[in-house]
Length: 289
Image (cartoon, rainbow, N blue to C red; front, side):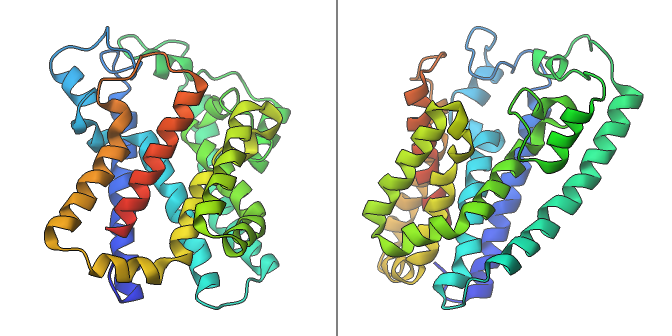
């Protein structure tokens, strides 16, 4: 880890930029029937198979990038707190409101305008993902759910206007629950707080009423990284050059592990959580590197 905070943040901004590029590549590639559904092997041969079920998937690992964003959010939002600054919850929520909602509302407005003007019932030659994002017509309940984010049902409503905004709902939820996550991270050692937050995410994955807790584990991983930042810097400084390259290789393996071709196409719910844990571990190691 870099010793200077500004350098550290700059390097993480670079990591965030690479993750954003991979999200963009994902949404470009899944336009094509030879790629979507991504998990299916039957529609892939040659290059498309190699792009999907080998480490080359790193370059368009969109879902993995979302988890990386969640970990980074937890890290950046918790870092001032663990550096000794007081946590002013109303001030924190106000900043998060303006940072998230104002750009989101602008994007939502443009989405509604474009969907109204350009939406078509079917686009020949494109994937079922594209044709599954159907304009259902404007309704006040769906608009209100989108406007607040918190009431938006995923994926039933999130794919009506702008399919990529679902992540913002979980950013808002983490912002609201941030004091609780900070309390758990501060009160307990990471070897205890990590299983606690993972259990919370398991409950969110299992019960629809608790779905809002689905990704708290990823945000919590970032919070723990912020808490132990100085210890991790000292530990990282002791690594040899070979050790640091091994750390990077481990991060890439965990981050892309669900695309290495040895998992079933149809995955049970517990396996999805297992993959999420591996991806979170890879994202955490990438941040340390």
